[in-house]
Image (tube, rainbow, N blue to C red):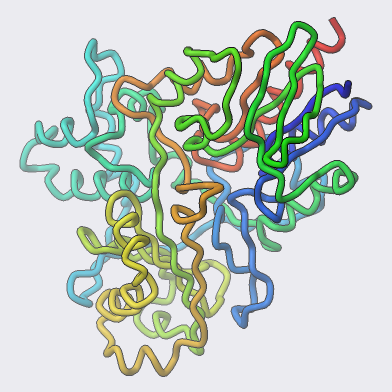
Length: 419
């Protein structure tokens, strides 16, 4: 019997494996997909001159676990800088201090409400009155995009509990060599214990540990298991746990998997600099892709179109994300589609919501589920532990949340083994 089995080789699973391996423990990692890295997918073979991220891109806020690893790996970061603009039919207008404008809305949320409600219900009360109408539009777009959320499903309380939902976005950075470089660093000394293309189907709780059965019917015995799969695979019981743990399933179902559609467009010329030299973000409220961004301050020929929430899921299911992205990009910058087609060199996208191993982008709290992530972060019988961004209430939806949760779960397993 080995010390621990880790289900999933994303950032959380790799972090947990690294911690346990460094402690000298005998472990095994089972990964359903053919590659490690989870929702990190970095392309290095485009003509953009920089890595192109199809999954995680930003480091949000302080992110202590992420930055500690980056320092260890000698990986450099660059802060996200530049100005925010709004596009209305190709006319760009300066949005000024966009984060401060949204804060005027977010500060009106009440974390102490006795009855939780959706963020949309909060907006429908028109907080701030007529004076904050534009700010409410910005705030709605931010929640839909940043959280990948349906405003009518995401919990107001969960957003209010964060204090300032914009803080992580306002203080963001990128890894110069891409998130893929961080995954490569995590995988050092782990490759021989990772079994790819092996999905776990059943976890049986035994008196002395657990038995994990994979899709091929092979059983693996261990003293503990750390489950790091994306939220939908916990919600729909893709992995059966016996005997069942109702508290685990109930908490998972209080969370919601968010959806995003990202299209990365590599161009032959940085045409936007002829209009605005220091451009960072272009907001397009109520459009299918409601924000575009450059790589500012890095001058790279790359624009990223982003859609979050219900519009993203609709785009994904339509199969037309790339076509719509080009139409919306031309509209946002007020240029003719024919000219845009001439300067587009390549388009890159990955639809996470269509991948059966992920089924979405990242999680958020549904109405009434503000404490669900904390429940998932508990140990169950000291043998079953969950990790992943959905289990980290402080930084859910981020690589930082995944790393922090993987480290936390590994520490709990070590406590079990040493007791």
